[in-house]
Amino acid sequence: MKSYSDKESAPVFIKFAKPISQLILLGLILLTVSGIGWAALGYPEKQMLVVKHILVAVLWVVGILINNVYEPKLHRLAPTPGQSLTSGFFQVQKQLLALEAVGTICFYTIAVLGVLLE
Image (cartoon, rainbow, N blue to C red; front, top):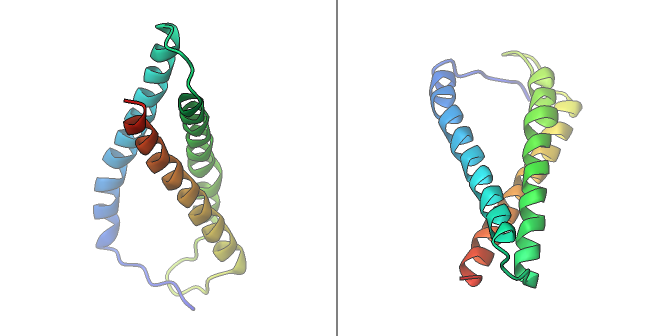
């Protein structure tokens, strides 16, 4: 298998990736601040709220791992156009996809718990 680079798609990806990342970061900050706010206001710690806090913490860890460990590895191992893909690239890609799946599951579980806590 060889890498084929689409030079036209890179600017489009860059254009959308940064605002989406900023939106995700803003959402995480709001989740964290709301959790701290609930605790500061003295709301009772229901079991679902504790689970939500734990999932927000997991989401932070997953995000930090993706941005600071796995994406740089993936970029470092990415082949240049015409070069063969390596097993290391595939391995890091699978790990990154697994982390993204964990993050997505955490996010939707947090959303459901937020609705159930109302």
